[in-house]
Image (cartoon, rainbow, N blue to C red; front, side, top):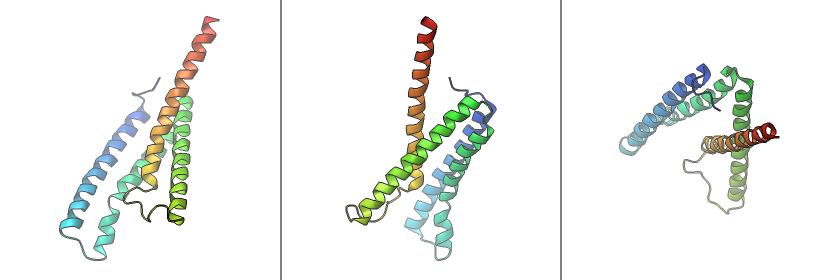
Length: 146
């Protein structure tokens, strides 16, 4: 099963906590600021970008895990999860764009960008890995029984 105590996983968890906490604080702060005291240009651009930086940090954190994990099996599972996330994200955003191009959906994502769908895809990939691990365990148990 998972290696929750491996050094790579512990670093991943710390980084993820730091970046997601920063994201939440910045989203709340920038949301309040832009609603109550919108900053003038060019500060509005710089401040609007701030919440995106921790999101990029989360992507970096996932990629760092792929580099730092020493166990090849677990690294393969994480790579598969990231590939599933990438495919899921590309699929959703491609379909979304075509729906907008043909005026089936209005333009704009209203907060749902590619990173949101990639993170959703990480969840889909984790579920897929869970099914695959159970299948492998069942096959191993069946092989031992025969």
